[in-house]
Image (cartoon, rainbow, N blue to C red):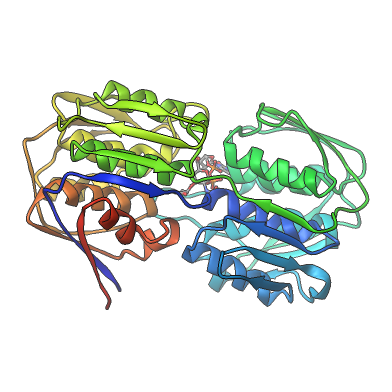
Length: 421
Ligand code: EPZ
């Protein structure tokens, strides 16, 4: 497995461009299954999860043409099966997102249960309950979801928990259901809204976008001539590089991004002492060479502080001035990065869902291991400020969600290299 070696001590400065959002591209690529006509999706990030999704759709018989600008044309007219096999689903849980579209348009889906992952059990019970309420016949056998439905019917769905992909699956299913569906307690993440806008461009009738009540009037078919839809910028990638600059006392400008969907993160970076200025599609962060102040954060569904930024702020607090508490309320086991940072000299105490961080003067380089996507990114950030060469192993987690991370960090002055295995 590839490793990353980071030599700490460099202050980051310069500019970089943000890629399209992974968590927007994945549901939108699945949503293309709903379209009678070919659709083109632009601003697709160059990530392993995208490759996995293309393989998943390709195996169904869907035609995919990708160009050098990472635009993907998707034509479902040759689809021949409605399968999502375990060998692909276990590498990418988000494969569950083909369930709603396959059921809604083709009336059949055979999708492996995604199973848990390092950060939690990750059940999909809310996805399945919602589809059953829409009239689907759902069986779970041999680790697979077998779903059938002549035609889904609209329903009133109250989500017992706020679930991003649960909302997305049911939203996609509702677009072709007979009648009206109302989804209450819907997730409001910007990636959910991006999917909804894409579906409406294909002829869906969704209102309440951006709120926790989505109303969908089902239509008989979806499609639009020459539809080209660009994915929104990745707010978590943006936040990750801003934290990297804040940790190193640096000064960077992030371009091709969207400040308006990062309010909670930008507020916390200002609290940490960063000078932040923004335009429509850029963010400038300047620490004036200072160390960050420790900041307490509590993760929760959008628009509150995102759980996908928790590990990065834990890394920042590890070397910040003062003491702060990081509280994780979304996932049950999302502190695996802490023990790795403790091996680098971080003073962090775990108490249930809280990480009490006492900033230390310096971290010491050490061989560390990544366990999930954002934890691995946080270890790279820790390496940027550690004395010596930090080796981060199992970085396939990083390649799932960060487009060319070492090139982007090197562009900002970091000393980082990949050791292929
Ligand atoms: C999405 O995962 C993201 N993934 C995650 O990003 C992100 O961390 C998460 O939302 C929270 O924002 C994609 O969008 C592809 P959830 P998702 O369903 O939808 C419970 C990353 O780093 N739940 O919102 O799987 C669940 O256990 C990844 O890019 C049920 O109980 O998360 C969790 O405690 C990691 N039953 C909570 O809801 C269900 O049927 C929120 O999970 C579904 C979820």
